[in-house]
Length: 297
Image (cartoon, rainbow, N blue to C red; front, side, top):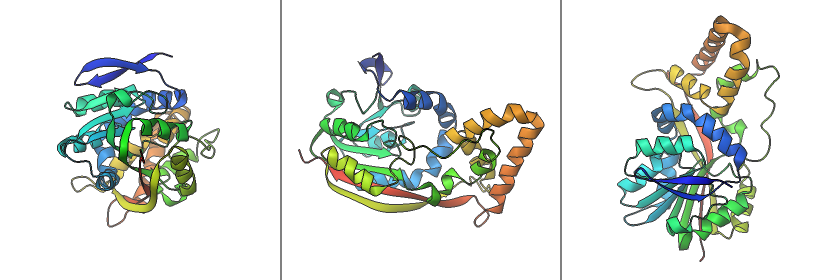
């Protein structure tokens, strides 16, 4: 396996390579839009990050591991709380974005399922905002993460519930996906945003990885897209085109439709969003699980 870098204030070290190659490739190429529109994504998902931090309560001196750290928003928040955070992500694109966005942060390009994280800790707190659903072997991943924590370490993360509860994955997006040829098909089982929709699976994974005091609670919050008085239509369109489904739809449809046809399809998306405004804004509920646990030692 190859070597991957550790980013710490611009310096570079190495740890051993990764097992989750499909996810690494997906997030390496697919994170460009996320990084470019970091402020939009982070504002939309802010309530879930708030809930994770409230549950984990990182404080002064706590050594914090942010799994699937993305562009570093929870690392920045942990730093502001006086903690000593390390963000780990499988995507070099995300790590580059995080390093630029959070100059005082420490970021590790690594696979939390297989790479040895002990030397970067040990950690008192582990947190994640939608970053833990992408492992090939989640039980092995959470066991590896636990091995890098101190006895009594706290774990808190947010993960999505079912797609049928989350307009996040359908509103506007379905207009494009319904036109794809061949169709994209149902979301496959395994690693992906809905991998932890079943709370019994989440409990089984954490129990099998040695975590205790496992609690899984519903946490719903409003995802609001309006900015500075806008109705959020353009913001939602920008974001959905930078998701995996949106990129797949664009790759499939833009060349076949031609510039005018593609523009017309995007106008259909806008119309769909405007038909579903809530109090004049693109807004819907995000349905998640807020999961907490503890390392027994």
